[in-house]
Amino acid sequence: MICLDANFLIGGVIEARPESRHLLAWAAAGETFCTAATAWYEFLSGPVTAAKIETMLAFLKGGIIPFAADQAHVAARLFNAAERLRHLRVDAMIAATAISQQTPLATLNTADFKLFTSHGLELAIPLEP
Image (cartoon, rainbow, N blue to C red; front, side, top):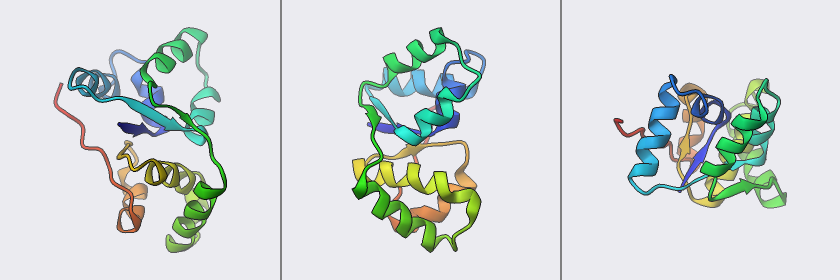
């Protein structure tokens, strides 16, 4: 299973985007997908159509993972370890969800998320479509 960041959710429903091609290549290789509730919130904040929401839900066989107390503890640890940089608050929540699910995270924002790899986050490597 691969956990999708918001940018993969957004780009995944646009045929011309590389994220869409990567999702299709992973799916063809047998991968399933989930996302963090916080990433899902970012996706739904749009603009996004009902058809795109339905399309992405069809890909999320692993579901939308709630942000609960366990993830909050991990996210706080990640946020503090990353020097409490304000722009990393939501990223820490998404990373904590991927860590709690023991899944790699697919993101275009590797610069920020690399700050969390020494704390247990694995980043997904896209397959060539």
